Image (cartoon, rainbow, N blue to C red; front, side, top):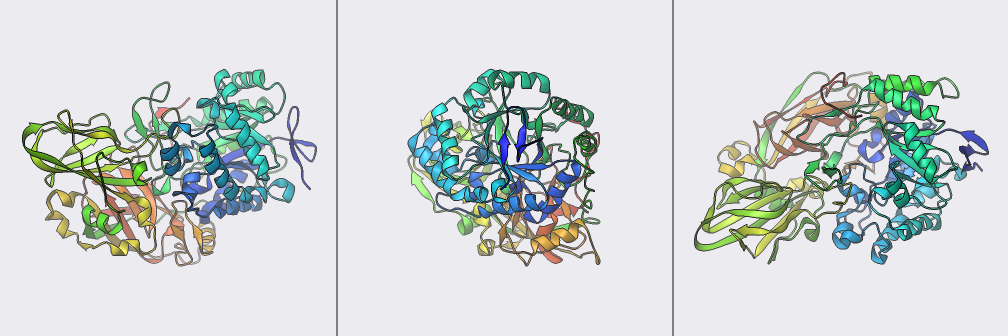
Length: 640
């Protein structure tokens, strides 16, 4: 039986010192048919371990509806086949720039500020979830012949709270559930974070992007013994909609990695491969020194300026990291697997069919509710998607300002069927006053829930009220349109599509809606390498993709095509699906212009695209091509 332990100054495997050279790769941000290739890229970079979070909300979006926890087990099995150890960070909170920090909406909506505390009701749902999930980890621990060597208790808790009772209970729960490998915590290298987030008897690790010597000095003040480890070495960063892209100089990042290793420490490169926020699962931040100011939604790409880019390709950062890591390898590094190949040429997809948002809501929406005040998304059970609010302005009355207080996040407003404006949290009043009587509709979208800081779990929708002058408008009808409604097999068949020309004659209603088109792709005969491996893996059938959409044997990919890039010139904001797989959100504010299309979701022959436009549609066509090029000296904000 293999034994992995925490020694006084290093990790030990069967008593022998070992250094962990790990990289983060989240199974839920990579199509399952591509796991093997991405894990091989980590091994070729010189890593001996992979780390992943587990998003509770992906696996249990509604209470009791547990979905495919076996995906974690399959990923851990793939890591073992790749010759990598594994670190699992099951949360229940994960941050990760993921919607709501991985906490389900039904949890934060019910418990509010009681989440991540000793609250008995919150602990009860966490325990129920862990007992469902953790068998996937327990049976794959290194002591049972599996790859799992470390499991985290909570996540960066010292950046949020100081409930030692909760943390000790959570660590005890992990043990009760059968976790026998060492447990650890991870926090920023600051006194208040380490005192708030550490647990006696558990290994404390630090998260930072530079300044290893200083960071480890702080860690040693709190933990004089035990192996040093940077659990999140931030080698890049993530992007927000409407902001400049964030990059990190490869030479600088390689130097920071070298410094960590020169300290004798272990490391987890965050991210080694970032992947994609498929399915609208991207999170959000709040600006300011305490993360409680303006709203900053995260883009669909989670490329992270990582050494293995979103498309699975080696970057200059990969080459430099490999040079650093090679000096710490026990033997020659594996060769790189074949580089993924993009779609050859460009394909223009004509969107020949259209259905208005109202018709889409009738076909796929939840039942409409009526209440005195506008319900939040949480009260309606909507995680990702939008809600249509309808309210009457009594009359006759003169024109007064009309707006929404506590709006999160963005609303397209119609008065008597005519577009009246777009409201946001910062600008919640229509540009022109509204007279009564009038019928008002607000189509409100959540742009992603906050995943870090004190605003974690804040509700979405109209969280204050609808105001006409100073008067609240009551008697609000609300109906949710969840992105999950599009995932059920055949669901979109219920949408009454008509010819796209009808949109032009529908007035303001034709500027939004669900557009549908088809395109054809032919494979390349005799293909070998990354695309062949992807096709073989995706043909296994029965699995779920990271968006929750099914991955079945009738979608084996296209020989010779590992990926494509989808662009929507002239379109404004919404979501795209290819063959029922949700690629994520697009938004003309940038900086992201191209959505990543995994090769395994494409089909040889006929393919189908849906575009759900929520603000202003462009010409009824989208473009597929080879995807974004490997990043080289692109402009952007430099992350230190």
